[in-house]
Image 1 (cartoon, rainbow, N blue to C red):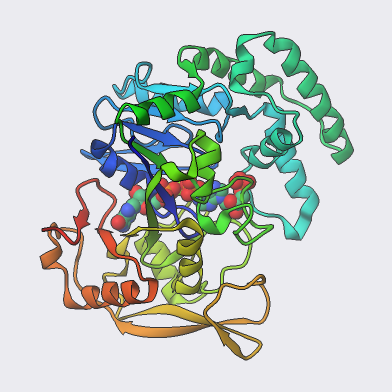
Image 2 (cartoon, rainbow, N blue to C red; image 1 turned 120 degrees about the horizontal axis):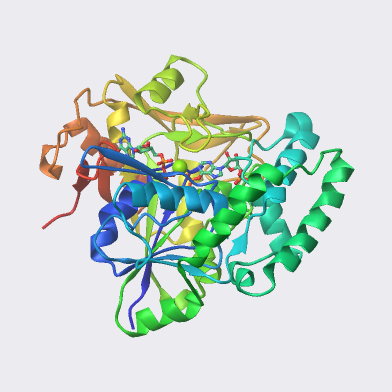
Length: 423
Ligand code: GDP
Ligand code: IMO
Ligand code: MG
């Protein structure tokens, strides 16, 4: 019996998951998304082309691998159709290779309106969601009011109307008119698009694939610090972004999990509101944003930037049982004279290396500072060519984190990927 490898983000999302899933896909038979929805924007670059995927797994560009949208995902048919149309237009046919769980929940047009209504009502304490209806859709799932992909096959109009009626009442309470006629048209076109694909009981397909010796890569969305339980609540997303989410989001047993690839940037970013202990408001922060082109791939919002936070990273590694690390965007630090890493928090004068309940108040990061490498990494192909100062940074991180860094990414392209610990 084969096992599932999991790739997930260890920070606040946008670590570069899409790029690495694409790079690793040739080693797998199946790539599966297990949570999140079109709040994700996973960017891939190869052969001079750039693609941003939202709900479709990042394994669709490498050979004829099966790609599965699992039951833990929330799917907006309109966004899905946009993605399918764009991919098919660029010559990537999907119908044979993309399969969708009947148990994945549907994001309705009214969920998007509710997302925005909740945010407006929160005023200054708004989460800064992507506005894609993620929270309200998962809320309906948990409160047992949701509609699932499988529902489109039987009596769908009736179920849809009842759900919209319920949402209309909620929107009225917020004083928001339920004007959906325009987005509804696109949405129903999306429903027709969904019907072109094989709608599956993905838990059976995935477990059968494992029993038949097929290998599976589970692709996480968002990041551990946005997890509904372990993230910086309430400034989080509404799903389990951690390794355990793979089990509930795909229907596999915990004992089926093999490697857990934890992916992080050589620094740190966050979009939306919420605490960010190592955030920089100075020139160094601007330089990270400019060098790393840190603007949201979905919303275009500037990402908040700061130094790497090892207290948060250690916590994420612990929660996920990470077995291998992948460091992204190393090239963004190429022209820094020195680099800082947060190794502890000082909270009301007391130093701790343990990630606390509250990271909002009275917290001061404790940094160590190291020399930068002042070298263009983007053309380097071999681990033996890495500059001494970068190797020292990697050694330092491995010593702190106690997990090997097996891949170092030095640019957005598929080819700008360096494997370490090669024989
Ligand atoms: P994801 O959501 O985790 O898949 O990450 P995003 O796609 O939202 O954001 C990562 C961004 O960084 C994308 O624009 C990628 O093309 C880009 N990227 C990925 N790896 C690297 C890298 O090593 N260096 C640089 N400069 N950019 C990278
Ligand atoms: P990928 O998969 C970065 C953030 C939003 C907001 C919070 C809640 O590309 O890494 P939501 O719309 O989910 O209710 O928003 O979570 N967020 C992300 N930040 N990358 C993402 O996905 C994100 N998905 C959600 O900015 O702060
Ligand atoms: Mg992203």
